[in-house]
Image (cartoon, rainbow, N blue to C red; front, top):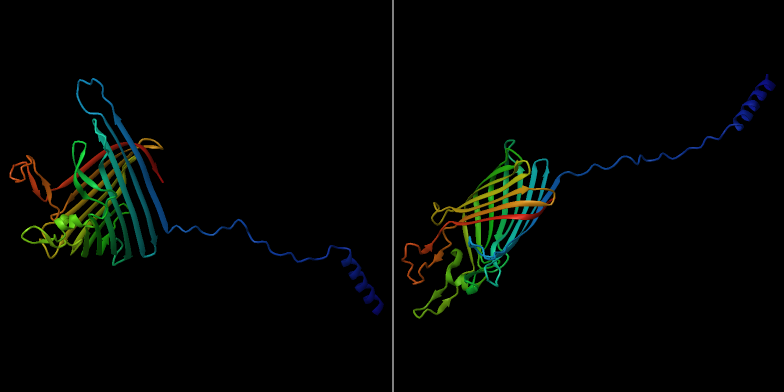
Length: 329
């Protein structure tokens, strides 16, 4: 019996030696599995560059030669995760034109606008607690002209004026392309960096104090702060195929000074996509500020008594149509 058991163990040992040894192999990681892409941030933008030229020779219908160009830059970066949303936007536009036999190029559009808005989900699906800060100014000096000559000093410049505004309130967003912000707590800081404009009291700042001879005793203030309320409406959507409308309406009321006189900023950018690289743009801007005095002496007698004279607040309007290179990203 012992011999039989010994032979069995020996046979089993010899049988195992005739087979491949068992080797433990490391487990390879699945290289096909990739980390999930973060979709919290969404960015977009548009860049446009437009030129136009008109040349006339013995043209019976009349007119003037002109050369014009403008550029548009629109950038957006939006964050959305859980109950938090953060929207950021930059709009920049600048254009020049030269007409007739003039040698000078003159501005025909100049805008710089930046916005940042932080939101947290409020009491229902479409309502958010919102805090917004935005800045509005221009890039280059603006002048009055007499033909091809500059008259006087610059009437505006970068940060002359510049507007820094804040708003705290509620935001209503029923869709991803429309929002309405109601901000009962809002502030508006007007900045006029050019001292001679501040001395004149331009754009609503306190003007300089002078003596009886007209000499400046105390220079005008370069800043003015207003406290009030704001309503802001935003709309951006493809309203037709290859036609996009970007609209922004801002209404501000100063609680402490003529609250019924509403400051209005209404900007619209209508973009028509012709093909991959060419677009047509219609730019429309409307501004009304009771503190901005528009002056125009129609008959240049210095009295502002002509029916066509202007010496007070007025609705400011600008419209530009341009066709050229445009790239959306």
